[in-house]
Length: 375
Image 1 (spheres, rainbow, N blue to C red):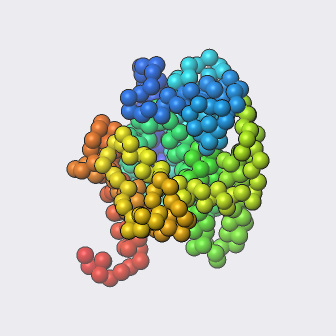
Image 2: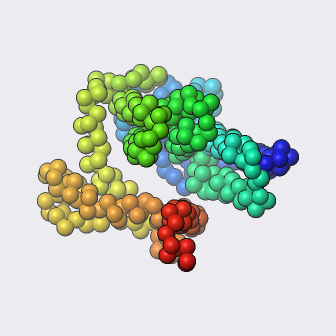
Image 3: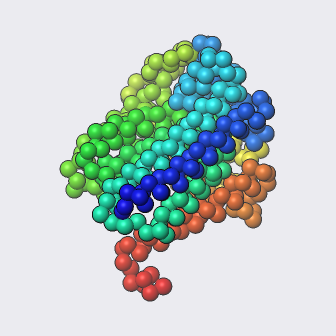
């Protein structure tokens, strides 16, 4: 594509980035210096950032003890640094989240431009595709799940940043040429580890998903090395999330600092067994009518106090299709709207549902199934 066309596209995308920065800056100063009514968690993270900045023991934190600190360090440590610089606790977590959100948008912009330079060096990017890129980038920049939540003091912003960093790094390894291999593999390792320090459940998801993708690349000479990097990232990330690494500002004692690699499989089982309980607890004051379905053997494996592991895993398998579809496709605008937050989520969910449909459509089309070609 021509240099002029690329420069023009660059200007449009940069304008969206600058607009996002200006609105973020305004919101930071205009928001009241108190917990947002959209989320009660903002106050807890602010208190933890202050607690950490004051070098108090993490396992003595009144809300959730050391667990919340260990599972959110990539968010809490920068926020505690801002608190030490003189920002208030609420402002510190909001500034951290907003910076992560802005960095996410910047990273996506750099990736788009790099991808276009590599893939369209000898091709012409049509006007329609250029417009589509700009529109999709604008939607992502101001979508509520990205923009609103990254302007509040929540760990969704660092979680999003490190997940996308992992996805982009895998793409760069296999699609952007060998000159990016070293940097991309380092970024992949770092993103997995730091995702564990944003939300451990998401860290496991990123690691396992990357390994599943690598199984489709077994013929590539790079794959064994990348496979090893992913495994090391998962092991190190899980170990750090379990508390074996230094805490840099908060002391973790009983039950966490002594965790070893042999404890990781046990922690995986424990984490898995907590899924139904966490899903049920999240329904308290929930922003929609999503429910935990009953299990046919509920009497032998209840959600709150399951008597045996076999029953627990059978019920998890039974609930998996519903809970997975709930995660992917809800809230629905017609049935799940019970608050302002759920209305915002339901409206945006229309966009994501269309995206899932288009992804499935493109997969089928590329497979060349004649029936769908006729349709």
